[in-house]
Amino acid sequence: MDDERGLDDETDIAEDEKGPERTCVVTRQKGSPAALIRFVVGPDGAVVPDIRNRLPGRGAWVTAAKAVLEQAIKRKAFARAFKRDVGVAPDLVGQVDALLERDALQSLALANKAGQIVAGAAKVEAAIERRTLVGLIHAADGRADGIRKTEAVARRTWPDGRDEMARVQFFVSSQLDLALGRSNVIHVGLLEGGVSEAFLERAARLGHFRGVSPERPIEAADPATSGDAALNET
Image 1 (spheres, rainbow, N blue to C red):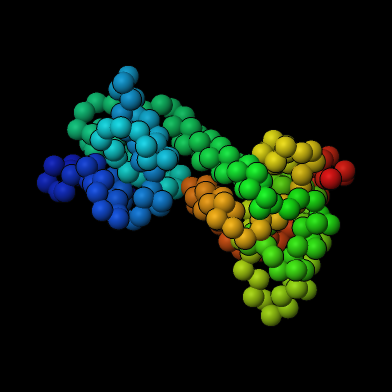
Image 2 (image 1 turned 180 degrees about the horizontal axis):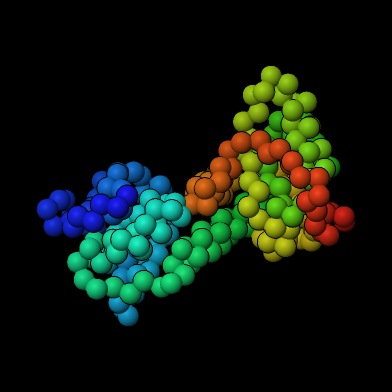
C-alpha cells in the first residue's frame, strides 16, 4: 500500500470510465462501478465525491472502503490520477460517509413510499413468520433485548439456519423516523421488491465503506444498549 510509483508508465486509470469495470487509483485492482467511488475535480480545483457517477468531467475511482480512501489521500493519489494539483478537503472521508449514508436513507424513504416497508416490532415479527421479508433493519440505539427477540423469531422460522434476510444496523431511530415519516422506529422489515433491493445495495455499500457487513444475522450482545425511543416504539 506504500507504493509511490506514478501512473505515467501504466494505463491511465483515471480515464478508465468505459466498459463494465473501473480501476482503483490506490490498489490498481479492477471492480464494478458499484464497488468503487468516483471522484472528479470541481470548478475550484477541489476533489469532489460523485457517488452516483453523474458529474461531468474526468473521473478517478477509489475502492469503496474508508481505509483505501485514507490511503488515496495520504499518498496524493488524486494529484497523480488527475495529473495536476488538486485540493483535498481534510474531512473528505467524512464527506463520503455522509453522502453514502444520506443516499441509503433516501433509498429507504423511496421503499417506504413504494409500500415495501413494514415497521414496528409486532408487524415485523409477523412478516418474518410469513417469510415475506428480504431484509431487517434494527435501530443502532434500540434495546438489545428487543433485537434479540426479533432475531429469535427469525431463528424459529428458519430452524435449519437458511435465513437469507440481510441485516442493517447503521442508523439510529431518529434517522429511521425521518426516512419513514413516523416516530420511534426501532425495527423495520423490507418486503420483496426492486426498491427494497436498491436500498439494500446502498446499505451494503455504506457498510462496506465503514467495514461493517449488513449481510449477517445480528446478535445483540450488549444488554445495556438502549435508546429512549425503544421504550415506546410504534
